[in-house]
Amino acid sequence: MSTEVAPIEAEPRSSAEASGAATGEPLLRLRGLSKSFGAVHALVDINLDVPAGQVTALAGDNGAGKSVLIKCISGIHSPDSGEIQWEGKPVHIRSPREAAALGIETVHQDLALCDNLDIVQNMFLGRERVRHLTLAEEEMETAAGQTLSSLAVTTVRSVRQLVASLSGGQRQSVAIAKAVLWNSRLVIMDEPTAALGVAQTAMVLTLVRRLADRGLAVLLVSHNMNDVFEVADRVAVLRLGHLVAVERAADIDAQVVVDLMTTGTSTRATQPKPAEPRTADDQA
Ligand SMILES: Nc1ncnc2c1ncn2[C@@H]1O[C@H](COP(=O)(O)OP(=O)(O)O)[C@@H](O)[C@H]1O
Ligand SMILES: [Mg+2]
Image (cartoon, rainbow, N blue to C red; front, side, top):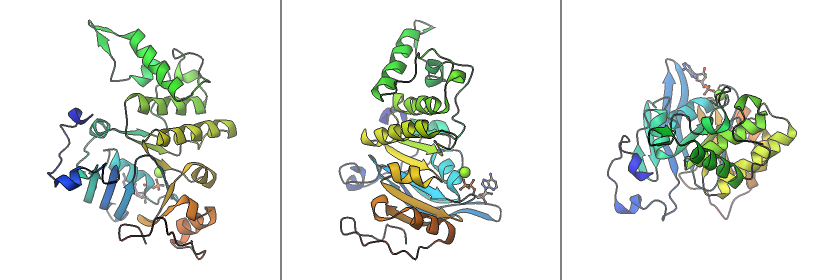
């Protein structure tokens, strides 16, 4: 991917910082990120790390700023101030195309799939493979099928099925497989289970877990505490544009998250965490 990031401006860094992966640098780091729309302070001084190999849940009430935060990362909004670091290097992500070039894939709530196209066409939309001036249909079909089976998505009967004929869970699976096919490093999902039934939700959460287990960073926006505690390693809570907490999921429970979402604090004391002591980088 590194050869494709030309449009992204990266400022020179020291060699120690450049070797981010080796030093445990998070894949994505937000530093002091703020975004206002007129008088509305949608995001205020957000500091958040999104590490590879983990599911970071982003929780918050309606209007908390979850979508604006995602849009700043995926190149739809540009932040007013603050810095986005990718593997330790500051980047300016000016469009979804630039986000994709870095390896950031966003699965929007409406999924951004085309009903009138089949699975292969959707997975390669805008990035079709061409051989000798014609579309490499067989090659794309094989790659799409292999990606789905590598994720153990077995309920899709044919990759030539129209997306319109798929269930909600299958559509989510195709959107996730598309991110994997394009070697994404960070997958952002906005309420992926909001419209799904019980079995489909379980299927999608299994896929989300599988992405993190493959070493991808996952940022999962969700209101649903069952989903959050089923798959998340870390939980970040936004309230009125402020990031009020980032905790290991193992250290808190749903009631704490609901308290944090609604009041910004929780009277239920969370346990001290000897394995991962809080640092100045963590949120108060
Ligand atoms: N394009 C916009 N123009 C003006 N205000 C916006 C815009 N997008 C979001 N906002 C405001 O920013 C705040 C955060 O919105 P949003 O991120 O959509 O919340 P949510 O956490 O529900 O996703 C809200 O007060 C919303 O009205
Ligand atoms: Mg939203």
